[in-house]
Length: 122
Image 1 (spheres, rainbow, N blue to C red):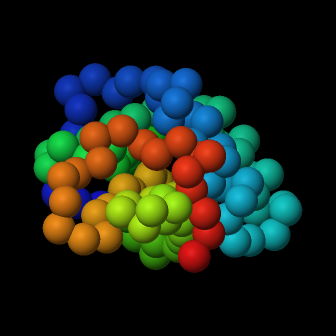
Image 2 (image 1 turned 60 degrees about the horizontal axis):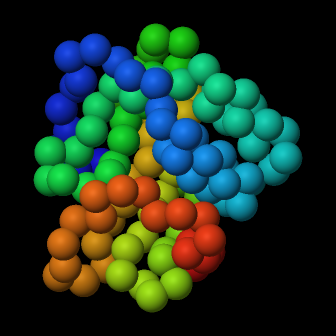
């Protein structure tokens, strides 16, 4: 994730953040059992960090515990259909860790998570 800052108070995911993250897990790589585990964690996740660059990248805690990005694995890797932005959902050591939105070319940061209807797998 880009340089992040810890939120002073954890916050719930917005409905849009939850929908996009759920879609990315469901449509990403991995077996059904692993997907089910991460989807269950999403229901208990809070946002504990947001990117300082202005993009929509998020860092999660599950049950109040942060994963800290160790042993990170990609659960889903997508691009917007216009290939302007990419989106990845991550886990670390078996725990849902966050969502990263990144620029594909020199353009403005993606201030909101792209909707599932504009995402496609690589």
